[in-house]
Image 1 (cartoon, rainbow, N blue to C red):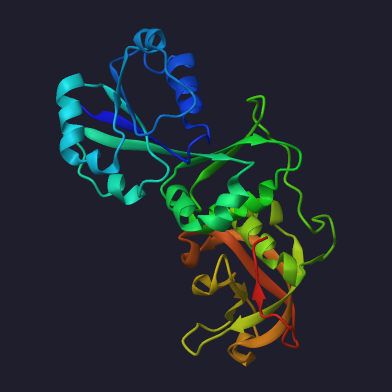
Image 2 (image 1 turned 90 degrees about the vertical axis):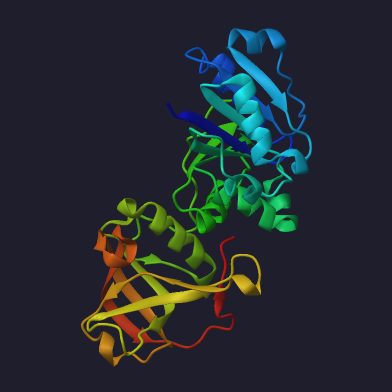
Length: 312
């Protein structure tokens, strides 16, 4: 019988222990079998023996990354014979230490959750970006807690989606309630033609990719480079921009497939102003449905002073 493993990652004080308590103890998640709770750091939130007993849970502590080995997990499996495992991972350890490990027989990672403190996320993105993104890349769900009215939810979502498009993102207020308020966009979706400024291109790109349906039938106008190599099929090009997510090494070209009957007349890497309608339809490039542009007008344009776009 499979033993489901639930992985909780995030830096210390990001809310991992609180989430585990809410799920395992307050949510009666452990009432149907034996739970093994593995703690890899000692956070502020403590687990009371009486609470663990009520939830039919045994706790084991692994304090050093060198001790977190396949043999150690097998030893814990033999000792506790769990029906499910909750693993609170140390936020400063390499995620690969766990993800590349052969788990004990029948252990199966079924869900990975990452917790983020809204108050410190920007600081970590600036100073420890690689470590933060490693946690987010592995997560099925990212919970951004301790949000308030000034939390830049859109900025956080774009940073997460750039490395993990499949991740579900939830925002939680300081009082524990879910924050389901709409994220503000820097452009007006009700305009007849939505003008996408250079500074907003990255925001539009990620939002349209993440929620194409709300752009269905919308018309947009933006400055782009025409990606049109000789091998591209007739009637199609990709208007896009080179974007930098964090540093020079991360520069990449981002754009959407665009259908245009005069596409073959466009010079590869030429600058154009594109006016197009967005449709949500199947495309091989997306391996499913996604934003496909239908050009209404394409005009030659001047190269901008800064050719890069950003995701802030």
